[in-house]
Length: 212
Ligand code: ADP
Ligand code: MG
Image 1 (cartoon, rainbow, N blue to C red):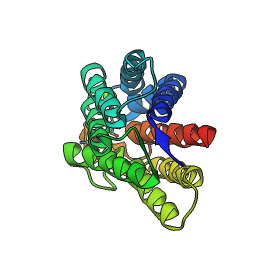
Image 2: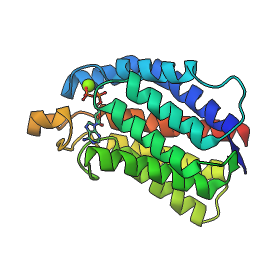
Image 3: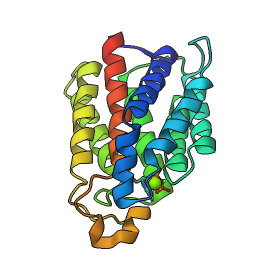
């Protein structure tokens, strides 16, 4: 299957829709271990990304994701703005010059996405951050593609792994970001960023499934 800028645009729109739908629940998760702004922050940013999408679904896939990243950096605020912004910019860098590309380029772009967050946030797996959803997702995608699964099936596995990764943050003690100020008291709550990261991966899986 070929992935095009049109599919990436549909992904960003669907991600924005899921974030809008889950805005209050993301904010409530952040109320428990942060400052109750994660859903509101992301909704503002993804709405701005959608508003700035090109009318014609053509052109460079890398440029598309890079400008989405810039927009997130300038509109989201909080820790998650620069983190997701960097993630989309790194993914865009991988796809630079491609108007369409295959599953392996998508995997490399998503690796860039995760490593962008990890580098900027200095977060490792188990720190109770978005990394705990994103890294298992990319690993599941790599494994499914290596087993020659079709892309839609592989992305479905990635989305399942991301949701499981987000759920697995509940007992963790936060070691990065605002939640880390709570120390042991951060345990017992699901990480808001891991939860939104799982939504973004789910949006990609559902979008590719629709185009498949
Ligand atoms: P803020 O904490 O500034 O209010 P948000 O509420 O928008 O920002 O986002 C919080 C989420 O950002 C956390 O749930 C966590 O997943 C993620 N996060 C925070 N700091 C880091 C970090 N250093 N590395 C990776 N992710 C982080
Ligand atoms: Mg917050």
